Image (cartoon, rainbow, N blue to C red; front, side, top):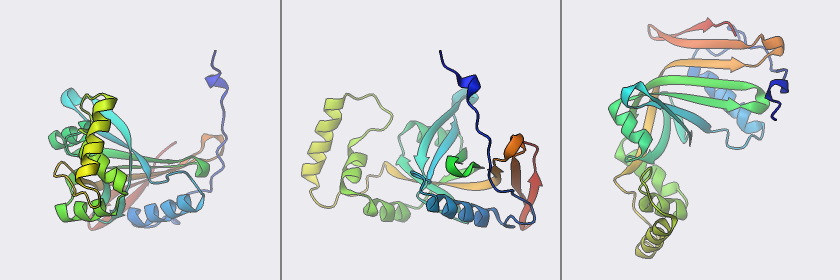
Length: 210
């Protein structure tokens, strides 16, 4: 029998105050991301991506953040994948970063758009050779057996021994945020939750009860 009810963590993160938080959520995220990178976390750029399918049914998976600036947060995928088909029908998503050693979470919500082909080309060219062949070989989210996938990979590796091109069915999406929440774990469940919402040409900061 599991003992899940006995598991306890008393969070001991630093206090997160409105007057000490950055006025711009992109700056606050940049600070926290660099602190996560410095803490030696495994893949601190890993984020849960939530989309909505037919009938309002939610779907969730882990993806990797590959770029962010004030335009938004960018990840890459097969445009025929399950998540891509959902985003094409309903171009809104939510992201969640969880940095356990720091007792922190960041939630981001917003509209999603495809990045420009040139941007996808530039990122694809930086990927390891095997990952580029894999992107060409995999009909992501479609039924396939292991032998067929291996055969496709080998055939494409023979066809493109040096510089495989980015396939038209693979590229980036950018989540353009209209809401951020920064969560800092604190003792006795008195966690800090600061939400950023657009206000005029800037952002307003709200504190939510934990």
